[in-house]
Length: 428
Image 1 (cartoon, one colour):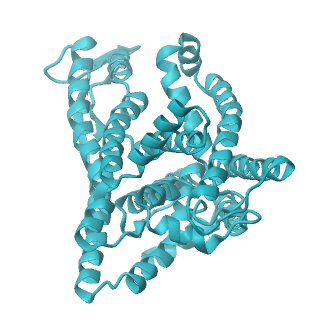
Image 2: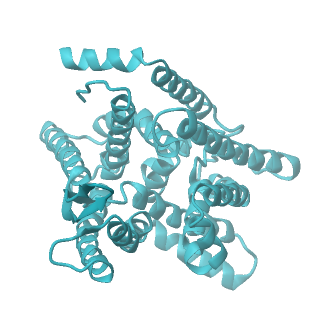
C-alpha cells in the first residue's frame, strides 16, 4: 500500500503529468455529461428493453460506449470514425497514393487522418438515419414518433454532430491527455453501464447463487487470461557484431525483439464490430425500400445478423481476419529485418535480410493465430453463457472486459513510461 501511495504522490508531483491526467478527467466528465442527454422524443425505457433482448444490438451498444441503448445525443458513438479508419487501412493495400502517404511518417499520417475525418461525416449521417429507422420499427411499443422534414433533419444532424464531437474529444485526450482517447471513451462507456447491467441480470432473470459464483469466477478467469495474453511475448534473440569506430570497438551486444501474442490488442474487436455495424445499418434502412428485390435482400440480411448463432460465427471470422490484418500493419517483418541488418545485427542461425524476415514472419504468423483464436473465444463468451444460463445481458461479455482491461493496461504503461523519463522509481 505504501508503494502505491508513493507512486500516486510521484504522479501528481510532476506538473505536466498532473496536467495531462486532470485534462483527461475533465474530458471524461464532458463525455459522460453528453452521454446522459437523450435525443428528443425517444422512449428510453422501451429502447432499453429492446437492447436487453437482442444480443447483436447489445454488442453494438458496446461499440458506441454504452450510449446507443439510451439514444443519447452522442448515441452512434465513435463507430463512424472507426469505420472510416478501417476503410483507409484497406485502401492502403489497394491505392498506391495512400500507401505512399503511410510511408511518409508523421506528415503522411496527418493527411490520412484529415481524410478519415472527412469520410466520417457521411458515414455518421448514414448511421444516424439508420438509428432513426431502427427506433421507428424496433418495437411494437413506439420508441420514437415518425419524423419528417426539418424534425428528421434535426434528429440526424444532432446524432452526427454528437459523433463528430466524440471523435474530437478522443483526439484531444490522445494529444493532450493520457492514453489513446478513442479506446478510453469506449471503455468508459462500458464501465458506466456495467454495474446496471449486472444488477439487472441478477434481479430480473432469476440468477441463483451458484450461477453468480460461477460468473464471478468466469470474470476473474477472463481478466487473468486477458492480462497474461496481452503481456506474453516471444523474445527473438539478436546479436550485434563488433565494429571499429575510430580507435574503439563498438557493438557486440546481445539483445532480443519481443513479439507479443496479441500484437493487435483490442483493435480487431473494434474493427470487427465496425464491419458488422455497416451492413446492420444499411439493411435496417433498406428494409422499407419500395423495390421488391432490395427489400427482400435487406430483410434477409437484417434477419441473418439478428440470429445469434450466425452473428456469432460471422463475428468470430471477422475478429480472426482483423487480428491478422491489423497485426501485419503495426508489425512488419520486412521492416524489422531491415532495421536489424542496418544496425549490424543478426538472428543466430539465420542470414540477415530475407532469411531473417521469413523467420520473424513465421513466428508472427503462429503467435497471431493463438491471439486471434483467443480474441474470438473472448468475444463469443456472451453467447456461450446465454446458452448455458439463459442470461441475455451483455454485461457478462468478454468483449467488454477485454476492452476495459486492455485500456487500463495501456494507460498504466503510458503513465509509467512518462514517469521513467522523469527518473522516478515506479511501482505499478
